[in-house]
Length: 265
Image (cartoon, rainbow, N blue to C red; front, side, top):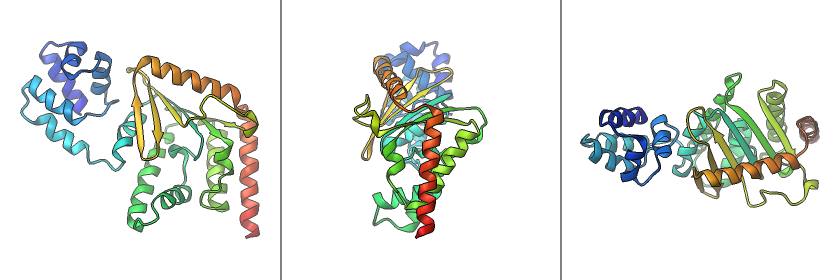
């Protein structure tokens, strides 16, 4: 809604996206992404837009409402971009990507990171994470391609039962031809993304974005040269990973090992 309002007022003033971007100190491409809802409205933009358009406190007020997200501030903009992406490519070195998590796995991850949180708080976080997975209910979009480090499969987050469940969930998505999944094996040795996770998002009418995430922090990158560099990194990861067929076989084998371990317990 805010993006549509930006476009309405910009066109009403006869301004191009580049002309509006100059007083905001952003590119015309960024304004385009703002108008499409791919980029999140920031408070400093809202103040400036109200000044430029003479809209009182319209953008400031609505920006305050927008800030009340169920996601952490550093991640909220990435989730909103994810919801409009046509293709999502993600390399995960440590855990199952949020889009693919199951309830028991997500609960184990949140409880490990927030040992003193109330059960109600953990419930809220789990529900928000599972809500992201609804993107995969559409049979074709977004295209999702994930590369999982073998460590993701071997780290028994939540115990054998939770791991068997989440790996079987991913396998089912692959077998339904809903996602593409590859495993980067330990045997690949050094690779192009040893420094961390990468998420790439492309859109039908906006420039691509990259998202880099660390501990309680995240950065959405729109600089074209940087995004190109991360895209090349992802291409190198795909080349180093097992084929989709061998990846599925490994994932299902590990899932069976967890299931047998859970039965022995």
